[in-house]
Length: 198
Ligand SMILES: CC(C)(COP(=O)(O)OP(=O)(O)OC[C@H]1O[C@@H](n2cnc3c(N)ncnc32)[C@H](O)[C@@H]1OP(=O)(O)O)[C@@H](O)C(=O)NCCC(=O)NCCS
Image (cartoon, rainbow, N blue to C red; front, side):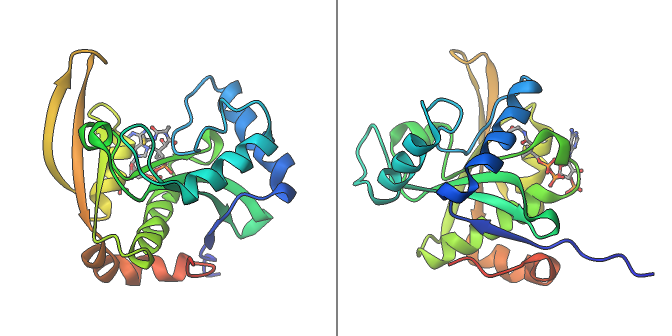
């Protein structure tokens, strides 16, 4: 029998997802691993506070300290399960130009190495296109092979790398041409999309 293709969507976090989000977060805590691209789910006092912060992030005027951002859950159709998270910073400040860039993401530890971050990033690029963002900068620790491969799989070009003496590790900065990536990889990822991001 032909294998069913898994389908995914980006979903704005809401109150009704509170329990699922807590399960998602606990999985990272139990694995003692960091969560990137959650807009602070791991450090806020409560889920309600996080929802409030995400709303502020979405509408914020950019400053050197804070920039506007949109954070989504990556939800898999089967089981209606949160499998990842992704945050899109719509404007960059000086610090983000240096490291971090426009997009941060994580896939929950039990769902890694299934290609999910590639569809996560593809869906985020669709959001970028909708917002008029033509190119995205994505920073990555050089030793984070899974992240670097995700970026390269969507056409990311390494533009520079450097040793960050303060952090103590090498940083790579990649650029993805949004329209080019969507054109080139659309046929691959369209069957995996449950809905086109708003
Ligand atoms: C980075 C991360 C999001 C990757 O998620 P993932 O769903 O496992 O990635 P995918 O399955 O889509 O794999 C992407 C590519 O990386 C490769 N890959 C994944 N995990 C790997 C690993 N541990 N070692 C080597 N390659 C790996 C895959 O084979 C794939 O390569 P391909 O395109 O050649 O097939 C995930 O490891 C994670 O959440 N890490 C913690 C948070 C983080 O580091 N975020 C990035 C900083 S913003």
